[in-house]
Image (cartoon, rainbow, N blue to C red):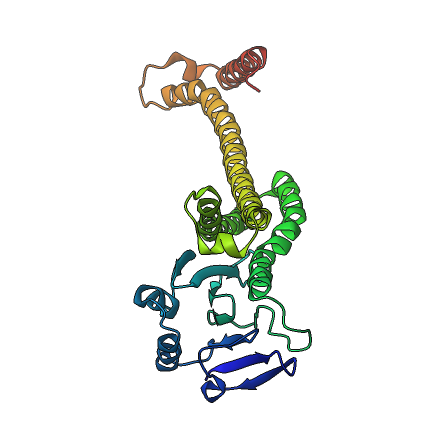
Length: 321
């Protein structure tokens, strides 16, 4: 189903309807906003054909999964963005793919959401304010996409701080599993944000004329770039900090294991000569004079005790414990 909003400058009102409301070419200050989120592929193709969209751009717009992209042709610009749809970073349910195909008078909008238990939606079209330039709607959606990451990244800073304290005081395998899940999510976020950062970075350094450079001022394009650059930096910083927690936990665990092994080694070392003495006097030879001594048992215990104490003192002098 296609949801179509047409602004009539004469009445200064929006009209809602379907394709029957559309009459091309648009004239004067008419503006068109079309929601294709619930439209079938056939309906989308029909509408794209009406606007004579380039076949390659139309193909990218129709795809259900496509990396962030920016492309222009025949007065239309295709912008594909990815918003984060999770409630937090404990899991990655997928992303919302926002496809915007726009010109000075037309905005074709499509938002594809992953299957999930909770609803997520980008800002809906508002008919109350007067008709604003199409570029302002595009700008509005770019900010909404960046905001889908920013608020959760800011909140995660406090969560990460508490997690670090918890790992230092009593880290365990359960917390390690949590860290690995977080790292997996941030790795996926890094890909999404890197695509979008590079998209606006390429636009800034592009020397040739570009339709979007005529649509937005240089300061606006730089603002878009800086938003995603900061988001990417925060994502990479948290990913590295989580990696440091993993390394710290592994180092601490390794140190604890080494300490236990050292203790076991010292105990084993002490018992080696004692075991030798016990084994020697446990041999069944007839001619063993010590077996007939009245105090032989006590002398043997004394020697064993002295050996153990001497070895323990030696370990203490060498500061092995």
